[in-house]
Image 1 (cartoon, one colour):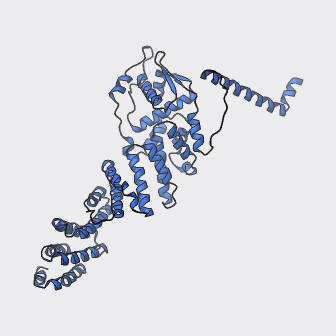
Image 2 (cartoon, helix red, strand yellow):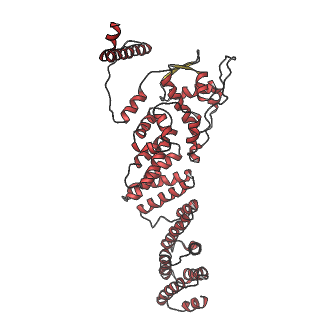
Image 3 (cartoon, one colour):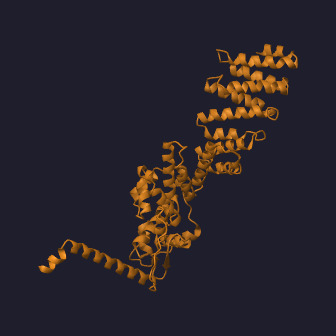
Amino acid sequence: MDSRLAQFAALSQKDKAPAYLSLVSETLARQDQSLIATDLHTLVETVAQDGGIVVGRQVLSELVRNLSTGSISDHALRKRVVEDTLATLQPRIVSYEEQVNSLCFQLADLLEAEEEWSEAARVLMGISSRSLTDGEKFRVNIRIVRLLLEDEDSVQAETYYNRAASLSNSTSDRETQLQFKLCQARISDYARKFLEAATRYHELSWLAEIDEEERKEILSAAVTCAVLAPAGPNRSRVLASLYRDERSADLPTYNILSKMFLDHILRPAEIKTFEARLRPHQLAKIAISSNDQLASTIDDDDSTEPSTSTRRGPSTVLDRAVMEHNLLASSKIYNNITFRGLGALLDLTPGAAETMARKMIEQGRLKGSIDQVDKLIWFDAGREEDDAQGKAGGLGDVEQTNEDTGAPYTKRWDMQIRMTAANVETIVQHLTEKGLILAAATA
């Protein structure tokens, strides 16, 4: 190799290009590939230093083309050649920008095949964007986001997602746009914006361009995010939409979805089963603020009934979601509940249970009021949740005319009387139709 390169050095600039190109083809065509890496390193170094920019670009472009078409079949050898060529050209990257970019794409493909996600992303980050179009920049940034998310690096992934978002209108390619939308959903998921993530996942699960098995996984991710979302009317709408989706019945998470939609209280065994399916970022620990810690230390003065729990608040995202759901479900069952009773239900101290209820009432996610003198939480009998679920299923608004009888508890009492009277009347009608009332009178 050295002797032939010495001969080529004496050639004129016009004759050097064909000579180097023939040497590249000859080297790659060898049956014995043991010395290919060493010889190509010597060739690239010589061309880059003494061949001139014009000749160098021609020769390197030919080498890059041959590498991309599989002239070297051995994966490890091809990776070694690409890495070595990149290292040789690094000091002259300005002169050979196009060739370096092509080699970076090839190296990223090789690393991705080895499931070295972060390394592949770092290689793509080093690509010079000066020679790329906006559409190509968009695709590169989306690919970096996907690779970083595979290694759970959501912080850096969000940075490149924001760069991609500013270029989202630069291409109309359907596949790239779908990848971008999936990245949107996953970034929201990792950022713990579970309600937004659930909505995006559910929208994607309907797209026919995506493989059916993958759509099922996306739908499952939508259910998981909906379960982890903060309890309230907005989550109820998403839960209603997922519950009424026929495909949800085949998911392993359908049991917990149905219980949340129907406002049933969740039990520890059900939570454990669901927890086993969560990803690490969905099991993140939650830090309790100093104000909440102080508020949770306030306990009932009744020493004859010591608190059954010493927990001062939820410890994980799932913990918080389940506690808020159970609190919302209890508001459908009880008119009021003591701090101690709610604490026993949520496995919290009375003070921590009051703090959670207070936050949900402040944020408009729970309708009720707190009586700190009697240590009671009063739940309003509003139907905001039911209305949200009904509208989500496409039932529309139902206009109801309610008689204004004064206080809310009077209204509730009147409604119960109406329902009882209506039920009694229905029973009497059935008995009359079957002749049972007449028989009883005759007897």
